[in-house]
Image 1: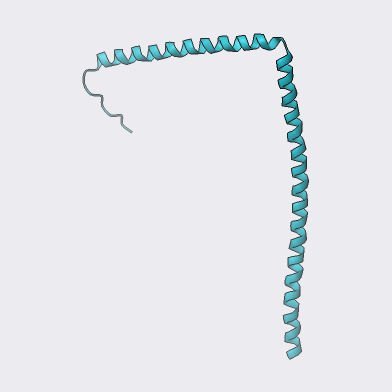
Image 2: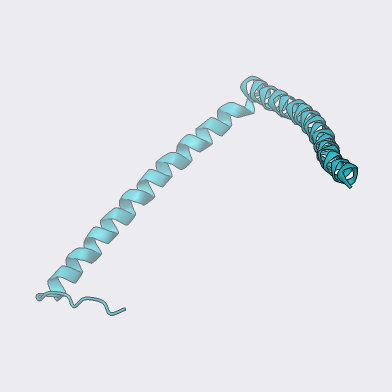
Length: 110
């Protein structure tokens, strides 16, 4: 009987070791997959960076980029004009609202 207990006790650490070994192997496989995927991601990012660099060079060399910058500048001026107009309109509306309301405004109900 004593030998049976020792045999069972000896098998428990053996099962634990097998489980640890299996988990270690699975973890190594996952790490290898992760390394492969990171390498692939690095290649894709490098290709994307090259694409942006080439596009930047082409835009600098292209004569149409001068016209594009002028159009962007014109749109920026128009945007500023529209913003000023909206601010003046808001100011005008607030002044009219203040003239019509002499007393305090009631709080909005929820």
